[in-house]
Image (cartoon, rainbow, N blue to C red; front, side):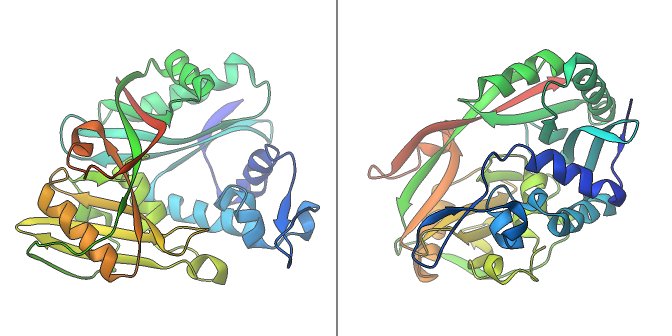
Length: 311
């Protein structure tokens, strides 16, 4: 058994590792009814809806190729040709208190892998985290099984929590400038924070959300995505408004910035969202930033945890 960086030849086995976790494959028929179907009868997009890029060989190969082009780490545990586990990680350089760190953004092991498999994978990731000096992980607060894995194999300790907040897009009395912005060089966010939308790390979200990978899948690109540069009274940021899957008037908002969220930037985001035609905006924020939200904001009780370990 060895832990190594994945190759394109591993794509099929990694996909099998992920798809084995889906008990029933479904889709909506023309009448809007849910029907169960064999995996082979689903389109690439219909498979995508069950969990993203690793649901199909085609999209998995595209995503893995991107990672292997210097945009991230892709680990596999290889036991004589069998892939027992897979993980992804990204180097981040951002504001304090996080600073420079390696972020573990994906962790999946086969059923009943045993301690040996998970220890081997964790050791390889921790070795790569020695350069930055810190490893970070994220997980839903309700997923205590995953929290236990990160504590047991990495020694990760919770540092803060975030929650989703829904608020109205509306015109605001604030001076700001904005324009479409489609440059994708990750160097632009070097040293920046993920001021809004931190379900994961700034670099991990940049690679999955800001960069377009799926122009060949019409159903994915039909969801409107607006990428904007904004300067709100001297507070610059890159902001992404991504139309939600089942509600075209709502958008998820992600924001990279050299500063944490400010009132001026929040007003600009709400105004931009309104001008782009959205009614409701969903922002993921830590409690410190949530204090800036208006009183009529709706909070989701499910929280996201960021935990770290110094290496």
